[in-house]
Image (tube, rainbow, N blue to C red; front, side, top):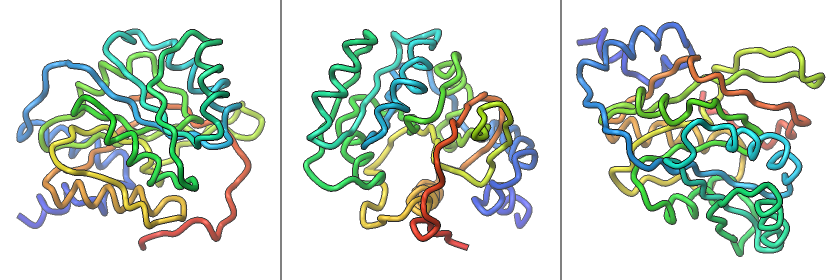
Length: 231
């Protein structure tokens, strides 16, 4: 029993190889879902360049866009510009203007409320999605399993990459309750970890793998004081 607790514990998720082994074990105890409409939830504030350079092209490259709907939260004063950007690139996103100061958790909560399906994937505008995201989602997300793909980080020269197992900002899960990020958290990073534990305590256990080919584009580092770790 102690070994089983270790295998499903979120404390183990920093090891991609360990969790790849664990995910196969958990597959026998979880029920898979039939493919259905998938909601991608993102937020964007002052990052329209990344939205246009990274997210929109990768969305257009999905091999099953008809099964995917994007919900994008943004500040009210950026609504017109983002709408024009979507028209320019011929993509239809459900844009949710937010009347309050940006926080990633607060904005994501707004689009989680608007999402019309229970199958959720939280991402970022600076992450390029793999073409087979839809298939990967329904391969890995199960009744008792949330999918935390490990992304590759691009360097400033956009040539070198490295694995980024310490990040848990990308997550696929089935919304089976009132899940929300802690919007009182104003720092970066801690809201993702708290959300992971929220799923964990609801009996939805995290798995990690590097099969998704997610690519995180470089941006200038955020001030370290805006990060907060839970360990």
